[in-house]
Length: 422
Picture 1 (cartoon, rainbow, N blue to C red):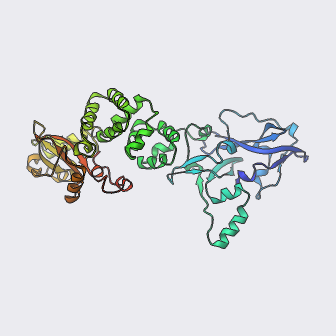
Picture 2 (tube, rainbow, N blue to C red):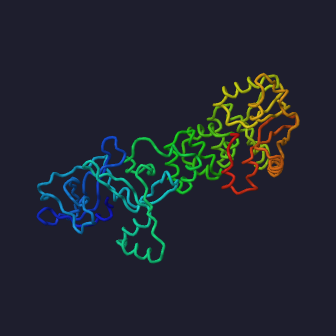
Picture 3 (tube, rainbow, N blue to C red):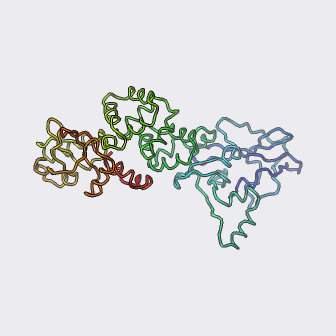
C-alpha cells in the first residue's frame, strides 16, 4: 500500500542518478471492466515543461517506506514517452483536495490523500483518505501527529473510504474514472436530499441533472419548498414540469407557490391537464389552511363493491396513487359517506360489501380549517390522514400527518415520519 502524497513533489532521477525533474502528478485511467482506476504514468516537471513516463518504469510504489527520491529504471532518453488521452485523469490535480460524495456515509467530504495497491502486476487506486492522517501527510506531519494524538489519548480518525463507495460531483473531468451509472440513484431520496443540502446551488443542480425525473421528484419532496425553488431555478421548464407531475399535488403546489408567478403559470401550462388542474385547485387556498395543505392523491371506492373488488382495483391503480392507508367511500356526487383503513379491508371477508365494513362516523376537515386544527385532530385521534370536505360534503382532498404537524415539530423530525399516503 502507498499514498500518493508521499510521492508528489519528490525529485526524480534516472538509472544513472541524473536529475530528471520533480514528480507533479500521477496519471490514472480505467483498465478494462475493473472499477478501480489503474495508474498509468508519472507526470514529471522538467525545466518548466511536463513529460510523462510509464508507471512501470519506477519502483517507487513498491517501496515499503516513502522514498526520498524517485528512481527510474532506465535513462530518460531510453524511456518511451507516455501520451495522455482524454480518458486519463491526473490524480493530484483532479482528485486531491476535491469534494466527493461518500455513498455509505451519506456525506460530502474532501479528499486529503489517495491510497494505491498492486494487483496482478498493476497498481490501482483502492481507497481515498478523508481523515486526519491524510491532512497530516499533506503538511508532512503524520508521524509527529500520531505521537501527539497518542499522548493526548485522542487518536486521529482514519477516514478511509473504499473507491467503490465514492461518487464524484458531476461536471468534473475525473468523473470518467467511474464505472458508467451513478451510485447516487441507488440512494434513498432522503439521503440524496441530505447530500445536496451540503453542496452549493450549482453543485446541487449538477447532481440532480444526473438523476431520473422520479428520483428528482422524490428528492425534492424531502426538502423545504424554498430550497426546492432554488434547485429548479436553472432547470429547463420542460424537466421541471415533468418533475412536478411526479410529485404529490400538494408538494407540487408548495413548490410552484415559491416560484415567480409568471414561471409558475408557464410550468402549469406544460403539465398534463389533469395534473395541472389538481395543483391549480390547491393553489386557491391559503398555505396554512386545510385546502392549502391537502393533497388530491387518495383512493375512493363505491359502497357497493366487495372487499375483493376493492383490493383488485388497488392493484390496478398501484402506479397512479401513492401508498394507501385509508379507503374513502363516496356516493355518485363524490360526497364522503364512509372511511375504512387498509388493514380493515385486507382482514375483511372477500365477499363483504364495503358499505357493511366502512365507518360512517369519521373526523374530517373543512377547506378553510387551520393547520393547527388539522394537527390537533390528527394527534387526538391518532390518525395518519384526514379527509377534507367542501360545504356540500364532497371529498376534495386529504391532509397527511407530516403536513399537518409541520408547525408543531421541527422539520428534521417531520421528515422522519413515514410517507405512507403520498
